Image 1 (cartoon, one colour):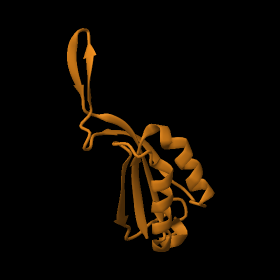
Image 2 (cartoon, helix red, strand yellow; image 1 turned 90 degrees about the horizontal axis):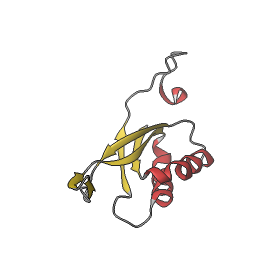
Image 3 (spheres, rainbow, N blue to C red; image 1 turned 135 degrees about the vertical axis):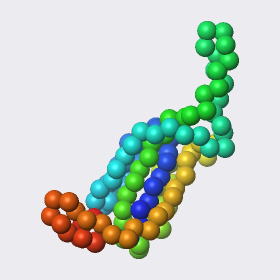
Image 4 (tube, rainbow, N blue to C red; image 1 turned 90 degrees about the vertical axis):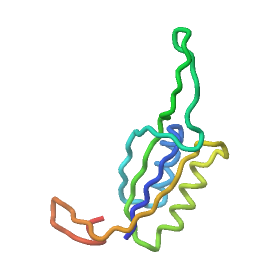
Length: 112
């Protein structure tokens, strides 16, 4: 099993959520996050003073899937979230050693 963690633009929340449901992803965790990458934010003026805003709003999707689904889902996420502009986000893939469903005690693939 692998955990796919994708950090994307906030406006991609609904399109990506719908695409993942259409791809039969059984569940996901979505968080509102802030961060910065290569773009390092932007400058704005507040009451006449320049302010550097270097933490940008993003949305983080986390899903746990079988190893065989990873490549297809990474392609789906990339295609759905891509605008071609700086700040489109990143996808991280982590190994998952074990999953336990708290309610039933199920373990492994059946707990996902």
